[in-house]
Length: 363
Ligand code: F6R
Image: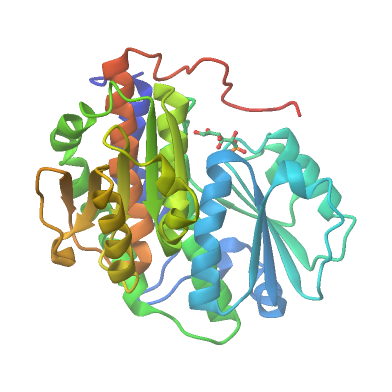
């Protein structure tokens, strides 16, 4: 039941601290990941893994895009990420030592399942399903699986399923690195443990986000910008806004702005930027100046030290500090809440958006 919440989506957003804790439960030692969380064969398989192909649809695909940054940076493994409906009709070249990974909340998405069956005819070292539904087709048919433990997700727009996928993918990153005898990243492990609390502090900003959402209710378009691992978070923010508020939203890597989308920016265009204090911040700041110079309305989600101060044409939501590796996960939460509140203001059916189904079991 929805309990005290007006919609399932809101309840599921607020469940995230709890389900993130569940997704970590029993999968970490004092300072590293337990590789066997992925099953008895994981150690041997990850040791052999020289690259990773990640296949998924929709929001799950966005989680895969984040994982690319993580696996490359922290495990030194090249990664390709693709939507299942494209992958299954290509003729993929599979280099020696490639691990096949699917991401799915339901484990029944037709294209993702077909992609797995197709991959089984190719030269992969093995398949891993990261999934929220135990016993689903994807889990049954994969060599290995890791459950995301988000619990049932009723809202059609995926929220807690996405953030727990990110937890699973960070565990995968750490496990591949460890199995290959590389780094253990005790700092990331420690940061993972604090994440439920930090998420709780972000959720406490809900009323501030609700206030921000008023600026969107009358808009027809919105632009989301991010750099690095926050580009997929911008994509996910745009998808959430489209799905439940029916506002046309697009996401761009901030560096692409002047290659086209800047032409759209005027005083009617809200621009949402995800700007944690990482090494790409200075570049992002100059992109934001470009938006400002064209009269765009800026909404910046940033942490304290960013040094972007609110003025008339720029509104800043200050988020708590988190280890930079985990910032993409944390910055997802305010974007979920933003789209939720915009949809409520517009009076759309938040939990059952028009034309969409929770599980897409036909092609
Ligand atoms: C978006 C959404 C969809 C799903 C997609 C894949 O909010 O829910 O984009 O992410 O249909 O579904 P799963 O993860 O069940 O394979």
